[in-house]
Length: 403
Image (cartoon, rainbow, N blue to C red):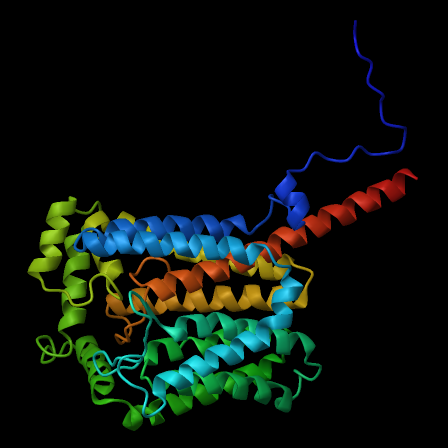
């Protein structure tokens, strides 16, 4: 005996069979957020394998940090973007308090232990936390909150206020000192201002002013920071006097990148080359060198392509979202991670001064990869809910047309 099923009434669309999680969270699994997610995942795996070339124990630790980052990214998908927007200023203030703690006088070394002359980490016992990494994400959220509400961005005063808001974390990070991280904020702010419709002539004035003031900051840099700039200039003109001193790291980096050839070297040989050349910080800001030595030109181009895809995916979300806050967050995350990758890879190739800036998702570092994955989770949340809203609007329009 056949069971008869009642057909839906004419003009009434059957409800789609959506997964339970999608219904609970109100998201759509088909969205542009997968572009940065998959790019970041591929970069994370490449980073773990690259670190294992010379530091197997650090690779295992990086795997654990990556797992924590994935969990945090998933947690960022749960709350609505509107809720995150509401709390963004408070989170930013909390990260500023941590930055103040790093540079405040009288803080015991048991809490903030200086390393290589820098006070960038808070000692949490078994692990260390680098507040500047989380401050980057918190600043993007707070700036997006403020810019989404600003009504006078086309005036000079309207641009001045976001610049002041940005200068606060930049000054605190420079006091650590961490020049590389501080360099990321203003290019990111320019991208967010452009996304919000600020006048281009005002942005040009900001860029030109920054370019003119940059040389004036040279006397205020630390001696080793000035020496790195001097070594880059010397390397460009063919002067090798810094090759065995401050320019040693850059010289070894270029040598090892060339040793990778087109197809790279076997793992043992690549590890031996890196150790024989005594490349400093090979697992951290010089990880692109290790990857290029192991996987050659093809491996280097793969990393560059994935970093570019991540930034393009974030910009795609910024362009396609209907929410001003989501548009600004997408532009901010895409600009910051894209510029950071550009600077890191450029300094390993001798195109920019070495600043100690890490390569997103590839370099070793717990705070860096966790904070970066949190930003990716936020991008996915914005894109998934925007796609869900778009499909619901489309469905409503179609039902209205049937009526």
